[in-house]
Image (cartoon, rainbow, N blue to C red; front, side):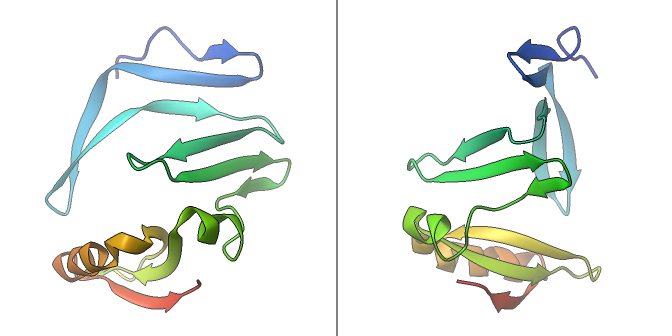
Length: 120
């Protein structure tokens, strides 16, 4: 992998951005890996959709908050949370934009995934 030198410090958070994304395929879906972000405790990043919805990820001394409050911030941002099981039996938490639920259902069918429970 061709990472730009090593982790680059931005005050506390460190980033390792690939000069060229790593390309790989999972279940016939082509993915691009652009790098890594290393957070120290109590540091947060926000991922932003093309429509401006935000999804926060926060590091703690014991691990991570991998989702903002489901019945607060995510609801306000327009996400619904699904617990999904794939055809191999692996379970995932997915944040779905409310207006894209039909697209998400089509994705689940194409990937042979099943929604076990909606949390919001």
